[in-house]
Length: 112
Ligand SMILES: [Zn+2]
Image (cartoon, rainbow, N blue to C red; front, side, top):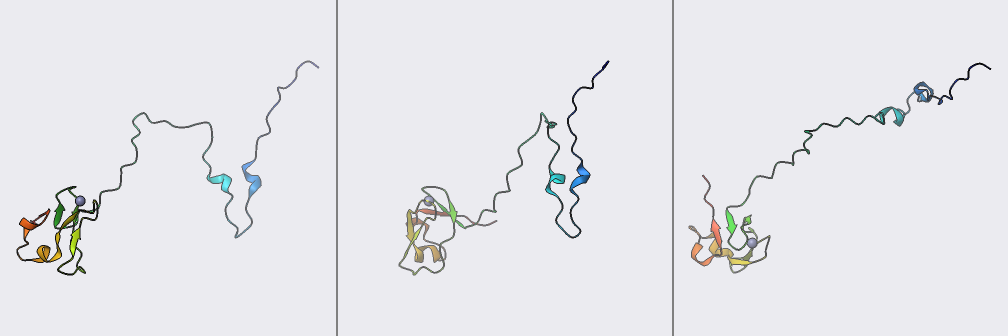
């Protein structure tokens, strides 16, 4: 024995797992090759989804949340902030034209 081969790892054959016709593709084919993680130094986190468009013609004075007074409230019902639940005034005062902003704890945002 003059030379001995180093022990080899058995290489897995990718062709051994051919799916049956009509069957789902083998999952191993979709796995990324391990051991080579490409690291980009300037990799940025995925951008956050764009914020939903600001809705509401009113702005809660205590917390600043924009909202619309619910349309199904009776005139004598109080409008509450959907965020901080503060009582912001009567629905009738919200619906008045112009709104009775002096009685409300909300600011009316006029659309441009
Ligand atoms: Zn609020």
